Structures are given as structure tokens and as C-alpha cells.
Image (cartoon, rainbow, N blue to C red; front, side, top):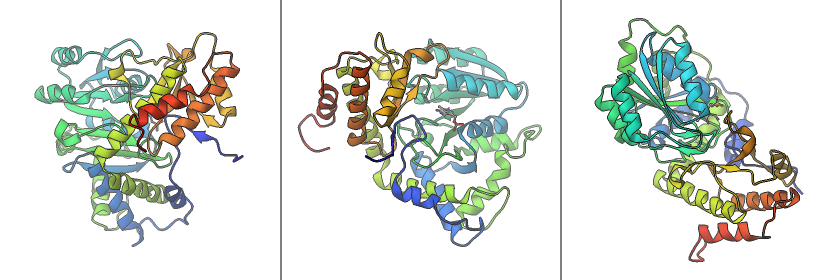
Length: 392
Ligand code: PMP
């Protein structure tokens, strides 16, 4: 049997062989004539992936947290009012970043596993008159997905900038940056973008860049100032050599290969595929007698599932599933951590990975003393994936 364990956590995810190959190349100069078109294609593809022909893409060495800091540090000055739409762990991180920058931060929250209603968010925008509204599209700690479009519409009407943390959604969940009026969509390379960890990725509206230019004083950090990166990204897209801080050459090459495949698949097809795979996985979970953390089906993300341990089963299940050859993640939300586990299903994940994971879960649950009907989860997932019996 292969030593490889199937990686089914909500990022990093399994990557395609061609993407992996890009990581094994020798470093080229970051201003080499061969590297310039690679970076250029990656940036151009991001406009397609985020459905943002008018936005400016940025790709910077760092993780998703760096993307959050780049957006906040560039757009927020001390004393600015910011509203965090709080759906869990990563919304709390956004609030912490904004507080460090001296922003006056309010939150509109919901119990873990739920999301504040659109009415509650709009009322909070009216009450606090924030300069910046942040939304976590999919909270990776709870598997809760929120609809950013109506929030963005209301925030724009009130003159606020809107930042979408799409680390666990971009390239998996529907995002229409231009149509929805999102000023910043930020993500990282290791999730549905299908590359290894190490790149912070943002697409930024002209309104947000104008806001940065109009600041009273520049951000305290050079690396966290989008205006420092702007001419570099523009030069790379135009295939001209440029330097501010050394790009992660191999990672950019890997990202470019993955983005090319994503664009070839087509965004509508990709969103539908993620929804279908998530639905099939959840059908399998239900057949195992398991329940989900999100309060309602409509809140369940397509990119990951947060699943409660059944009675009598604890976090040792995650280790037991690993012994069955599949790596899943424990809970993350501080209030509920010990009561659930998480499984990522994004990027190239398809029926075979779902079936392998359900099989591993079934065996591990049986070993933990949870009664399961042999094969029921796999059968349910296959039926959900292809109800007519046609090959998906
Ligand atoms: N936001 C969300 C929604 C995330 O899921 C993550 C990572 N799990 C982050 C931000 C932070 O990204 P990173 O771990 O790459 O810094």
C-alpha cells in the first residue's frame, strides 16, 4: 500500500501532479525572461477566478493571514470605524488585526455554527457607520458560509469599503467580485486555489486603491502597503522586470499552473462541481448517522464540512481515520473544539476522494464502537453524486 495518506483537511489540500512539478524546478531569477510571462498569466487568471475584470491582483509571499494584514493595514487608519461580520474563529482574527491597527471595531455576531441575519448586519452597518466592513465568506472553524452579496450592497450604499476573507472559499464557492461590489477579495494559495501554502493572494478594487492613496499617513509597515506592491504587480502583468521584495518564484509557478487549470474548467462549472461533491459527501455523512455543525443546510459551505462526533466518540476518531489512510482535521472553534471534526473537499477533490474518506470514516467509527451499516455511506454518496445512475 502507498505510504501516502489522502489529505482531506480544509487546506493545505492535495495538489495536481503538474502543480507539484513546478515546485521541483531550479530557482530562476525573479526578473528572468522566462519567469515574467508565468507571473503575468497568474495575475491575469486571478481576474477571471474572482470574476473581477476591473480589480488589481496581488500575489505576495506569505499566508492567508498576511493577506488579511495587507488589506487591513493598507485601508485602515487609527480611529477608523470597522465592522466585523463575525461567524467564528477567522472573523475574530480579522477583528484582532483591526484592533492592533487602532481601528474602532464593532462586531455583529451569532452563536458558533450560525451566522448573523442579513437584517442584523444591515442594522449594524447603519448603527456604526463603518469605513470598512469585513466578511468571512466561509468560516473554516465551523463550515459556515455567509452570502456576501446583500451585505456588500448595503455597505456600499452607506459608503463603506468591503473586504471579503475568501481564504476558504475562493475558487470553490461562487464569488463575483465586480458584480457584488467587493473592494478586496483575499485568499491564500493552499486551499481551493490548488497550490502549496506560501502565497497571499488579493484582488483589489480601484476604489480601495484610491482610498489608500488618500490616507493622511502611509501604513506603518512597508511590506503591508498595497501601494508598494502595486507598480510591481503592474510591471509583472506587463511582463516587465521589477523588484520590491523577492517573489517566491516556484510557488508563483505552481499557482500559475493551478490557475490555468481552474480557468480551463470554467468558474460556473467549478462552483457547481464543488456544490455537488459537498452534497454527496454530506449524504454519506448522514448515512453514517452523523450531524453537521452549521445550524441550517443553507449555511453549509461547499469547501468543507464540520461534523459533530456521535455520542461516545471523541477526537481520537481523527487519529483512527488517519490510520485508515485519510488525514482529516479536529475542531477549531474555541467553544466547541472537542465536539466536532472537519473535512475539506475543495480543489480537485472528486468522487473517488469522497468515497475513500467515507470508507475510512466508516471503519474508524466502527472501531470506536459507533454502529454503522457497512457500505451505506459510500452508496449514499454515489446516489447523491449521480442520482440517475449516469457517470458524473
Ligand atoms: N481566513 C480563513 C477563512 C482561513 O480559513 C484561514 C486559514 N485556515 C485564514 C484566514 C488564515 O490563513 P493562513 O493560515 O494561510 O494564514
